[in-house]
Image (cartoon, rainbow, N blue to C red):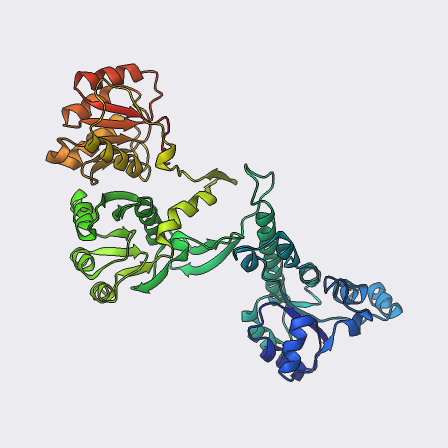
Amino acid sequence: MRAILSVSNKAGLVDFARGLNELGFELYSTGGTKRSLQEAGVTVRGVSDITGFPEILDGRVKTLHPAVHGGILARRSLPEHVAELEKNKIGTIELVAVNLYPFRETVAKSGIRLEEALENIDIGGPTMIRAAAKNFPDVVVVVDPSDYGKVLESLRGPGPGLEERRKLAQKAFQHVAAYDTAIAQYLRREETGFPAEMTIALKKKYDLRYGENPHQQAAFYVEEVAGSAPGGVSSAEQLRGKELSFNNILDADAAWKAAADFDAPTIAIIKHTNPCGLASNDNLVEAYKSALAGDPVAAFGGIVALNRRVDAATAREIAGTFYEIIIAPAYEEEALEVLGARRDLRILAVKDAAGQSRALTMELDFRRVGGGLLAQTQDSMPESSLNLRAVTKREPAPSELKDLMFAWKAVKHIKSNAIVLAKDAMLLGMGAGQPSRVVSVEIALKKAGERCGGSVLGSDAFFPFPDGVELAAKGGVTAIIQPGGSVRDDEAIETANRYNMAMVFTGVRHFRH
């Protein structure tokens, strides 16, 4: 029996090779894998002993040879294949253990030139993997070091059964597909628009107890993108608390995106992916108090996100309310002790607070529909690119303009039809997910209550009728920010002027379905 071992990830390699030796396998290898085995005292020969041909082109051609691929691809059950091997003096290869050059890790480094990236595209490895996986009834193919132990255990018995071989082959084809996806992503990195064909590489982070509801199965997958590390919740390290659920991850993602979208110290409190509390303040404790005051009833059992390191004083304030998750870039040691006293509280640390929301612009947003995916760029626009236009007789005062910009950022994180009421960089009330925009205004006003006086309103899309503007004015709102673009814009402007309101148009909308 013969096996070819050629791996980039050398975890568990030596023990696996020794186990194969003990089972009577002749081992053949190449380059660094061969050196590692020889240094460990494992008996191994070069692949050139199979091919009768030296490695050429700086190692670009090593295993691309009929003596290798004939030995892998021959169907042992077909007499004509066996006869052809004998005629050409080619021996069979029963096991292939290969994993590929670290292309994704290489291109993620700064300053990598195209030439270096191209040299890290594996050719022989994927070809051997695909050949062995195609012929899995006769050849065992292993691409994952975590499978070494199971394969050895099977080989020590009657050998891997057809079902085990099929699973290994499936994993092998998926390994190559993810690898090819990374290469295509890298070569596409300077292009704009959407390619005619596209694959997405996903790696399972862990299984979940269940999905959105207990009768649904679920798992958490992280998208692997060539040249960038995973961001947001995908990068989060869980420091404390019980395991995350499907809904926990969805809400934590929404909370983090909302908080990270602001440059100032900001805290978001999320319930069912919508902010029920959101506030910015140079003092983190005050930001938290303002966020909680937005809707202290809805905050119970929610998710808290901070875009700054959590200090002990803020942690003590947060610990006064029951939350499912707290997510932030980092924590003071004392803050962890305070929060850790709540045994079930899940504490997540996310990498790269300052750059995370900016990095989202490099990713595509995918939405599942029956039989396919919708793909779009992220809803991310810097404030500097906004062309604000005052359309009423009265322009917003500086304090109103500041709150309008806060409301405009906040409203894009709320489900459409979205309405936000804000004052002093604090969310006072919001209406979300209503078929009628005026109903969203009613809900926002009701949530804000007596605090409506002197507040500003942000709307994710234009007002189709002036009724929402009039309702806001009667509730005490003094300024509005909205995209504009309705055939009844003139009526909305006239209504605002009648109540001495300021209104600005952005020319941009923030639908979030």
